[in-house]
Length: 198
Ligand SMILES: Nc1nc2c(c(=O)[nH]1)N[C@H]1C(S)=C(S)[C@@H](COP(=O)(O)O)O[C@H]1N2
Ligand SMILES: [Mo]
Image (cartoon, rainbow, N blue to C red):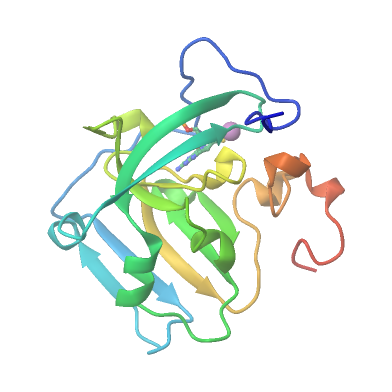
C-alpha cells in the first residue's frame, strides 16, 4: 500500500486559506533588506539588498503544506533561493544548531539548523510560476514543508544564527517547539525532554 501523504488529523479543504497574525506589510524595495546575523563564522552581519537577493540563483520545490489548524494543501510548486546559498554567503559559527527566522512586524519562528538545511526548505519568491501574492508573503517567505506551517514565515527579513535554542512567536504561545506533523507535535505540553529550550 502507498503511504499516505496526509499527516494524522489533517484534511483537504475547499480552496486555499490565507492565515496570518496582523496586517499585510507594504514592500518597499529601496529599504528592504535581508540580514543574516547572530553567531556568524566571521562575527559580522551579512546584508543583502533587494537587487542582490533577487539576483541569487533559484531552484524549485514541489511540496505539501500542513497547517496546525488541520488543513493541508497538497502539491505546491515553490520557486526561490535554497538555504544552502544563504549559508554559503554568510556561514554560521560551527557551534550553531538552531536559527530564528524573523519577519516584518517581529513575527518569528525557530528552526533546528537541520530543518533549515533539509531538502524541501526554501526561501520562496514564487508559487505556481507567479510571484507570491502580498498576503502569501511577497516578496519573500520561508517554506518548511516537513513542519507545521506556522514555521513557514511570510515576509521574511532575517535569519539569526543561535548558539542556544530560543522560542519564536507561536512556540512562546503554547505551540510545539519542533512541530513535526507526522508525529502530531501540535502543542508545547507534548514536548519530550530535549525537544525544546530548557
Ligand atoms: N510573517 C508571518 N508569517 C506567517 C504567519 C504569520 O502570522 N506571520 N502565519 C503562519 C501560519 S500559522 C500559517 S498556517 C501560514 C499560512 O500561509 P498561507 O497564508 O500561505 O496559507 O503562514 C505562516 N507564516
Ligand atoms: Mo497555521
